[in-house]
Every structure is written in structure tokens, then in C-alpha cells.
Image (cartoon, rainbow, N blue to C red):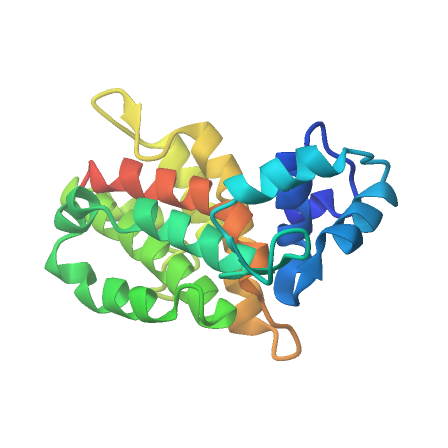
Length: 227
């Protein structure tokens, strides 16, 4: 179980969730003994018994231990953020979605595989690029690209925010290119892309990107149906 980083310093309903919180906060980046774990949990109002905590420690898949019985120490096998990245990657690159995107997205998908979980800035930029490209190609396949053109006469396309609005408004067979709820939720991805691409003083980390990924993936799947 991976717990949101917004839950830092929160108490938990049971020892298993309590350990998940500690792992998510990086508590297990160094070796920790049972007494130090008990103290840390007690400071947030989690007064579980040593027996409860020991049983929970045995159930965790992200910790390893050393020492002898009665004096074990525990440390994480991987960062919680790495586990989140792996979980999202499984949903982000399913075979059916990659096939529907086709060869036109080969470069972007390859680059995203290389950068996802490693570079927040590159990931944010690529997520935005794929989204814009998917919207344009979906409209192109359905002979509707004029609605994506900037009406100022510059020959450019409208911005991503306007693209999202248009994709939620324009329909094929009575169904919009993007469901309105998806278009609304995906605005977080626009913010990430703008930040990484246009603000030289700002950086985007994976912890900021990951909460947006369910909406990004949903948008990709909806658009892929139009390609």
C-alpha cells in the first residue's frame, strides 16, 4: 500500500497502515529498531503494541531486516516513490494503448519510458506533448482540425487549455473526444507541462506528477479510441 505524501505525520487506524506512512515519509531509509519505530508511531498517537507492530513488520514487502530475534533492525528495499512509479508504469504502457497510439507515437513513448520516474521535468514535457499530439491526430482522423486552429490567422494551433475545451465539446457519434470530467481533471497535466517547458526557474518532481497520472492515462485511453 502506498500512502499519499499529504498524509505526513498523520495517525493510522492499524499498524500496517502506520508502517506504510513511515515508509512513505522515508523513515526506513536508514536502519530502524523496534523501539525507535514504537517511539516514532507513539509521537503521532499510534500506540500500537509491540506485538502488533512486529506482525505488521513481517507482512511488509518493502522492508528487509538484519540482526537476531529480539534485536532486529529494518530498512526499506526501495523508496515509496519508486513503488508508485512502478505501479503507474504498469497502467501507462499497456500493450493495447501503445498499439492504438501506433508508430506515430514511437519516439514519444520511447522517450517517456526512458524518463518516467527519473526526470520530472522531462516527464511533464512528454506527457503534455503526447496529449497535444493525441488530440490533434484524433481530430485529424475525424476531419475536424479546423476547430484546433488559432483564429488569429497565424497558422498556429490553439493552446492546450483551449484544446481540452474543444475536445470536451466536439463530438463524434454523439460522444466527445474527451469526456468533460476528464478534460477538467487533466488541467493538472497542463500546469505540469507549462511549468517544465516555460518557466526556467521552476522544476517539476515526480511526486507532483504521480497524483495526476490517473487522469492523464484516462485521457490517453479516450483519445486512443479516436485514432
